[in-house]
Each structure stands twice: as structure tokens, then as C-alpha cells.
Amino acid sequence: MSLLTIITPSNPILRRKARPIADPRTPEIQRLIDDMIETMRDAPGVGLAAPQVAEPIRLAVIEYAPDSEDLPEGVEPPAAKLYVIVNPEITTRSEEMVDGAEGCLSIPGYAGMVMRHNAVKIKALNRQGRPIRIKAEGWLARIFQHEIDHLDGVLFIDRASRTWKTREDEEVEAE
Image 1 (cartoon, rainbow, N blue to C red):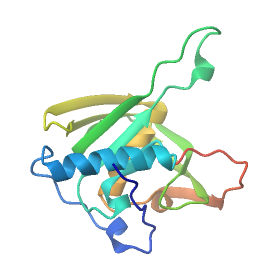
Image 2 (image 1 turned 60 degrees about the vertical axis):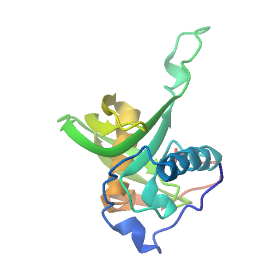
Image 3 (image 1 turned 45 degrees about the vertical axis):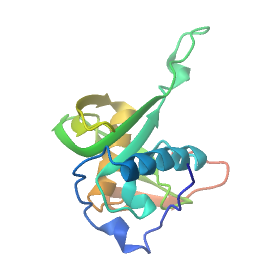
Image 4 (image 1 turned 180 degrees about the horizontal axis):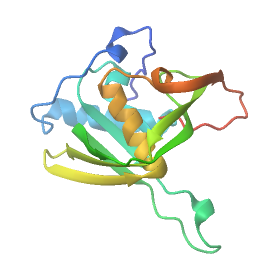
């Protein structure tokens, strides 16, 4: 496995709609998935879409662990769950919208307030090419929407009501 270069908005690939993947089981796609996971973790981030590493295909990886602050004392937090989504599509969106701060590995040093659906349902293929369905709420729903936006050439700054330069001590999860 190897670390990939995360591109910035100066690269036009970030602004193009990514093309579907015919068969995610190919060795090239499997290697790309592994490299994207390693790159996301190294960055560190909670999600990474293929266009962010200059691959204009409909693929994203997401790793999410629920916030341990909400758990009773002494309860072990669940392990982070890794999602690999190929050709994802949001099939249902909640009416409830939530404003929240977002960052992006492709736009380092900036954050913004983005209104997102509180819950979504997604259909996609997994890395073995099998159909999967995912229900996501809250922060996880935000991550999925952010990554799927990347596959459509949309950046969080396009949806942000306001943006700002982050301080070194400011913690904003980068998708």
C-alpha cells in the first residue's frame, strides 16, 4: 500500500462528476481502495473520495466511530466502522436539516458551516461488488453527504453559509 497525493481545488478533477465503476473487484480498484484507506487514516480524516486523489471514479471510503462522550462512564466505545462505497446514491433524505461545521482534506486550513440532511439512506456496492444499503444519521449522515458531493464535483465551500480559516488549535473533522 502507499499514500496518495490529495489534490486541491486547483485540479479540475475535483469539479467534475465522477464516472461509475463497472467492476470494483479488479486488482487496480482493490489496490486503490487500500491506498485510499491508508491515505485517509494518515491525513487524518474520516472520509476520502476518489476524485480527491485525482481518480475521477465513483468510490469513497469512510471510517467512523461514534463519539465516546455520549457513552456512560466505563462503557467501551464501539470500534470505528469502515465503509467502502462504490457508485453510491442517496435514496432517501430526512426533511430535518442540521447546520454543522465541516472541513475537507482537499481544502486544508479552512472550515465552513454547511446545512445537511440529518438522516440519509444510501445504496451502493461494497468492495466485492455486492449491493449494500446504509442508514446514517447525524455526523455519519453528514460524512456520507460530503463524500457523495465530491463524486458530483461539489465541495463543501459551495454549500457553506460561511467559511473561515481554521486555527491550529481548532478541531474540525476533515472529510
